[in-house]
Amino acid sequence: MFGGTSTAIITPFTKENEVDEEALRRLVDFQEENGVDAIVPCGSTGESAMMSHEEHVRVIEITVDRARKAKVLAGAGSNSTSEAVMLSKRAEDLGADGILSISPYYVKPTQEGIYLHYKAIAESVDIPIVVYNIPGRTGSNITADTMLRMAEIPGIDAVKEASGDVRQIEQIIKGRPKGFEVISGDDALTLQLMRLGADGVISVASNCLPKRMSDMVRAASEGRFDDAERVRSELSPLFESIFTETNPIPMKYIMGRMGYGNGRPRLPLTPLSDEGKRRLDPVLADMGL
Image (cartoon, rainbow, N blue to C red; front, top):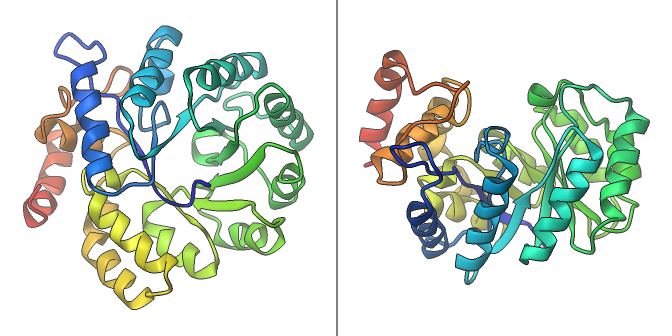
């Protein structure tokens, strides 16, 4: 359902630091014109943690309204189960095709608490849920055993795995029920995981190079791994450089240069440092960005 290439889009801001609705619409167009399968507003890259509920809902609304071909997988997670349920219901009401729901952050729930959190969300909506496991941001990992247990809950149809633990991800791939998708949450690991049977990527890099990411993932999904490897090698310097500082700081800088927003994240994230620019600018020049 959400295999292939999905872009975790930035949220462009104006010079006044408000949501730049015009730039957001153009960004959705840019993604669709370059072949992505789904668009993911209000994820980590979209700075959902720095937006009000009203802004969050508005960004989803604009994305759903603008998308013509790509599916919309709306970020709707929270460290509070009741808040995650509320955001999930709003995303469903707005017409999102599915929900990307981050594991509860900061509070460090038990594995049983994580299971019950997602069970409550699944019981509240009738659209697919993609679990988002990113321990580096949340402070807790969803183990393979817990993920496979949750995969049996009706409505939980996929996981975006960004733990970086290839052994754990392979365990999920091997043990998953039929139809359950495993999606890479790490651009650099995507091809390796697709060789193991993963279904695609929710990508940061595809903000600026959607066609090349789509080309790589499509080649891998068709078993043309030599072709996919050539694209991965070409994109590897970008994969490394866009995480020189906390995501989405470097990507906001890149997209600002490309005309999508002011190029700056909201506090407490700061604009890309001069050192970050010195590292990133040569890569962008080599790639024609």
